[in-house]
Length: 576
Image 1 (cartoon, rainbow, N blue to C red):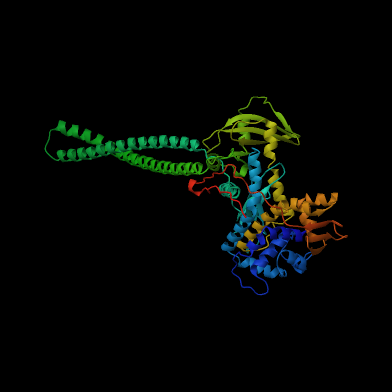
Image 2 (image 1 turned 90 degrees about the horizontal axis):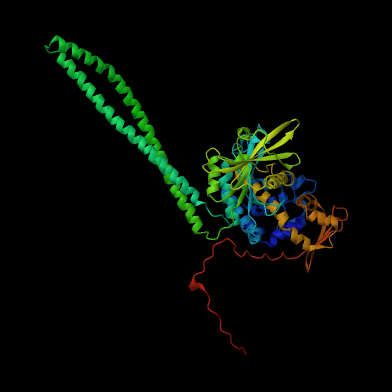
């Protein structure tokens, strides 16, 4: 099946684009670009370690037929592939990512176009997956300790976003590699921005929400300015009082030196005692007033800066809406509790998305349960799950009201609780529960990444090499799905066993891509006949040209055609 994968990528010109990727390495027996392609071949065959290219159960480096199918004369030794990965840099990664994006765009746009044509919402799933390494290792660059696999481990975090066109299906849109101490919430913005770039579709920005925050911020600025003005007035008054007291004390001390009556002397002594007693209090009040004034002025400056940022943010969102006159319905983002912080949730709402997530704090459910009736109306939503609607919920650091519901699961004799949070009116609890838990699609994708493509086994110890492995793994997971219709069309009288294999990406990689076959070049295309001793005995494929892809018609995308660019109608004439 590796021959078929290579033919598919060759006809879609991805291999040609990968050969244009710059790598700072000389060419000896193999070009560095050919070794990058070999690295991709290894990932699509499910190698667990880089050395499996030569020392695995079926060494790819010795398979000349696979090499020819992927457009290279021979496959290099795994050590030279490793040196090529070490020679890659940021420019290499950027060029490889651009080549993959050009290849993926028609497939992604076709899926998005079909969803929009049917009036179905776009659903993005976000997740963060740990990539632990040995806790004593010192050779992995930028590795850091973080929470992975329910414990603190040394390693990396892999943030990914996928599009879910239908239940159980996913299309990987982007992935980012970070040190192990990276938090999920810090990855939200880059994942959403990458998803918008890949799909070319974005929802209408909620500028009305930002205007509300601007009004609130203006009120806050006015309040702090008023408080600062009050303190400034009081400071000026205290300064006048302080100066007057000093003058009175000095004048009284001078008068006492002169010959005066005993009555006046006693009166001055009494007044001087009061002034001296009051003077330290005025000094303390003045110092306190100075501190309060400095605090209020700093608050005024901070709120004015925030107000300026909000106005700039509003202008950016308004520009986005002007350039996007026909946006789709709000796009939904499903994510776990790690992505849910008030600041990032506010950003997501103002960007026009509908978050569907869980509360970040585990004590939220306990606090909400205390406000429910003594006997809440728990509704059964799963085999061992119940939910009760809470209603409007205000999350810390998020100025916009959300909708919350509590779910519980019985574990032994006790219940475990969690809080589901979304924006907008609440659907039926059964639908809410099922729809949120459909994000298990991306969890299954992470499992596939680990079990089928072994992304957790880092095959390079350089930042660029690690990022290339992340890119190629996401590409491989998409390719084995995108080529399925073509493979079914190429299959000759497929048996149920062949059909099951073609419908299973895991079987395509772990079984079909590692099965022996006879490969012949014919006038009708490349003929592949699986060996009688393989897992697909007698399965035959004629690899013809890949089918044409219908270009998307641009639903929910702006299109402006200037009048002077319109072609004039052609006149028909008889031709002799």
